[in-house]
Amino acid sequence: LKDASDQSQVINELSRQLEAAKTTAQQAAVEAENAHRQAAAWATEQSVNSEQSQRDREAMAALKADLQDTLKAKDAAEKRIERLENDLQNQIKALNVAVDQAHTIEEVCKQEHLTLIDSLSRENQDLKVALNEANQAQSRSASFDEPASQSLKKEVDVLKKELDKRDVVITKLEKECQEKHVRKLEALQVQLRRYEEETANLNRVLDEQRKGIEERDRLVRQLRAENASFVFCVPLNYIIHVAI
View 1: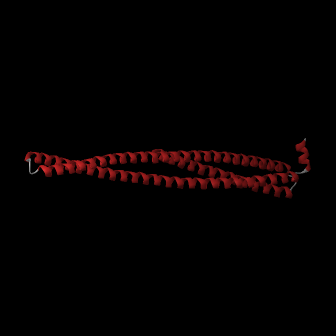
View 2: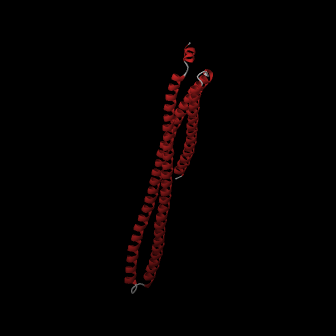
View 3: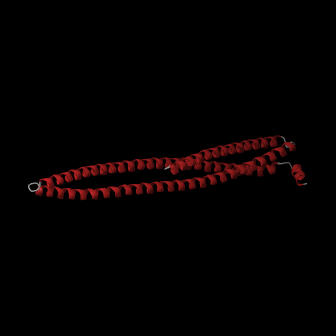
């Protein structure tokens, strides 16, 4: 159970890291959107005044830089998600192993208790047989040998006390075994429910991360298309200058 609790803490840390990755991805999307707005502004300026070649060059350079930054942010986010997914799968496997081990330990403990209970029950049965024989012997000797009858009576009393004592022990062991098994089973069930909830939360975060990557892909394609269209809008003398 301790191992399972440790694994749960690690999964919580992974969730926190995924939230941080999500924030980074959102910032990248905002930066890409800003680049798009800057590109649109540049296009407006280009249509109004084609002579501002210096501003055109700066805008195109900024657009290319924003595009490269967006691509780098996208690649970094994808790699981070891949690492977190691998870590999540490893933690899930480790937690499953811990739960299986807890079940195994609990089953061994239960079997040990049951073995002891069975052994005591057999001994009790032997005591009952001996007690019955002692009672019969006491009845037969009561009218013939008073000292022997008293001795048998003491033996019967001892057997009765021992039998009662063992009955108490068996009842106590059965109760403890059942209560201990129920408590551990309930603890495992709580741990499993928490694990399922945390896994579901992490999967939701991963889905959001994937959606963020898809949105960045869309922005990248849009920026590339606009970048290509800007090349055709650049003045001829600027293209000749760049070629030279």
